Every structure is written in C-alpha cells, then in structure tokens.
Amino acid sequence: MVACPCEVCASTDAKDKRLRSSILVQSPTTTIVVDTTPDFRYQMLREKIRRLDAVIFTHPHKDHLAGLDDVRAYNFFQHRAMDLYANEMTQESIVREFPYAFADIKYPGIPELRLIHIDKDPFTIGDITITPIQVWHLKMPVLGFRFGNFTYITDANRIDETEREKIRGSEQIVLNALRHEKHVSHFTLAEAIDEVRELGVPKAWFTHLSHQLGKHADIAPTLPPGMELAYDGLTITTH
Ligand SMILES: [Zn+2]
Ligand SMILES: [Zn+2]
Image (cartoon, rainbow, N blue to C red):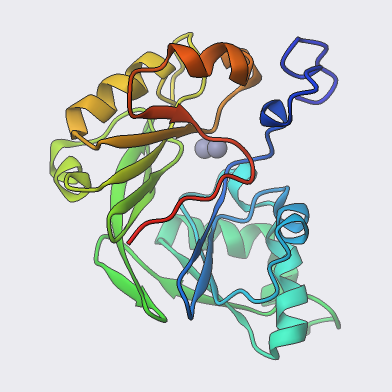
C-alpha cells in the first residue's frame, strides 16, 4: 500500500510485492486477461505478453478496470479493436470512465474497444470456453469464471448455492481472501478456507490479499493442506 510503513509493505520478499489482482489465461492459440488493473501495463510488460485476444471483466471497481487504456498497444500491433467481454453494469462503467474511446470524433492513439455482452451463459473465445459464475461483493453482482477445471473468483464475500454448483468439480480454484478481520465485501482468510471446503475443490490459491493479511512467509505455513497463497507471477497449469 502506498505510503505504508508496515512489515508487509516494507518486506523484501518478492512474494510480498503484490500488484492488483488479475490473471492471464492462455491456451495454445488464445490469450485472455481477466480485468485490466491499474497495474495492467506493467503486468503485461513483466510477463512479455505479445498478443492479447480479449479482456473479460469481473466487475467495474477501479482496481479491476483502471488500466484499460493500455490495451491500445495491442490495437497498434494487432491492427484491430480489443474485444471486451463484460456484463451490463461493467459496460456502463467502461463507457462512462473511458468516454474518449466512445466519442464520435476520436483523437489519434486512443484505445479501440469492442464491447461484447455477457451474463450467465457460457461463451467461447478462440478455443477457450468460459462459464460465468455470479458471486456477491456485498450487494454488487460480480462475475467469477470457470475455464475447464479451473475457477477464478475475485472480489466476493458470498456465493449462492446455485452458483456453487457451477464451481464444484473444479480441480483448482483461485479465491479472494482479503485479511483476517471481517470485511463488508471480501472473504476473510477463514471464510475463504470454509468456502473452499464447502466447494470441495482439492487445490485452492488465495488472492486479492491485503497487506493486513500479513507476510507470505508467516501465513503460508498456517494454511490447510491443498490451500496456498497465490503470488504475483504464479503460473498454474490446468486442462
Ligand atoms: Zn471490488
Ligand atoms: Zn478488487
């Protein structure tokens, strides 16, 4: 956290250097990113992502959306608009927060964006089929996504039983676990552990970790078998 002197923010352990939450999903032919965080540009540079087919959005909070302008580099190299898959609420925010990209008269160099509507129905990008899972972030409906046997859920503190059914059978899940203290719109670490047990997913990675959770090296050994803290740059293989 900016300006914070706590032991996590001052840590020299690379696993305590946490940028905003996002994942890149890659098949042999298709590359998708979930959310464009304020760190999107640096994350793409760090991972040397030369090609991006689409962005899919979980929800319109700034920490998941603010980096969108930087897709313009992909517009430049790929000679086409970037496909953005988002629900109605997120589409409205994109248009409101990046009005210049939707103006009648556009100035040169701005991102070219193509909005594609998604809701609860599965959809396909290239050779990747994606099943949306609607979870609750206090009162905001947020989309999680299942890709084959892998499920990604950020920014949630409640999952309805009907949506849990869509997650069950996953081999791996990434789930948010903000901190130890109760929070209005995110699972605590204990709540996230309980949710993983409820879902019966054998391998879980916790993400969207606040500096208030503590240092990676202190928290990781306390987790139950099959559960781990995710960290920036982590690569997971699934099928
Ligand atoms: Zn949020
Ligand atoms: Zn968030």
